[in-house]
Image (cartoon, rainbow, N blue to C red):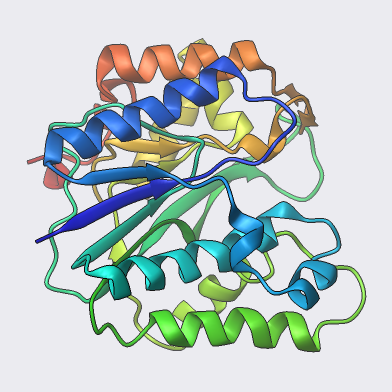
Length: 267
């Protein structure tokens, strides 16, 4: 099967840790025998009216562009396309595989956070199950790609008022998953600022809570670039924090999380 893995990043600067993340994805693609491309012309794939409606939120533009690019690759002769966000780190490439009989896959992720607007340490934490497009996989002649492109454009065309950066990604897909069964990739973690803090500081209670929510071991993680240089729930999300998380995940091949999994999930 002719497969391509592709990524993109649009920003004023590219922090070193983000380049490390993208390199791990490129290395993984090469390990699996897949082609790899870094696409830096996202705006060419999105209509002007859609860009104007996006209210300057690059996430919204990227959500549609990744789909249009997948469609282009499939039309050019690829059998499979795999998009991965730029802030995904592959820390156990040997075990990370995308083998499925499904024609497409979205991504299962769990968001670990405090309740309401309380800072970390001021109240209980919880895990919320979500569906995201941080990794999307499409085969030729799948039934979902054209629908998702239509849905993105329709949501944007009809939207008024403030716009969430997750409007056509996590918010839409999580709601859709409540109505229909979506095929999901389960081996990707979503590392919130609190989870990143817990990983670096070896806070067992945080790591155990997250692992208890997982449905499978994780071999890669989405590191939430959108929180960079911000304070979230009392956690300052610095480049150093990202670097320490990446180093620990790669060094342990994710064992720092996966060791807390239920024995039934460990192969």
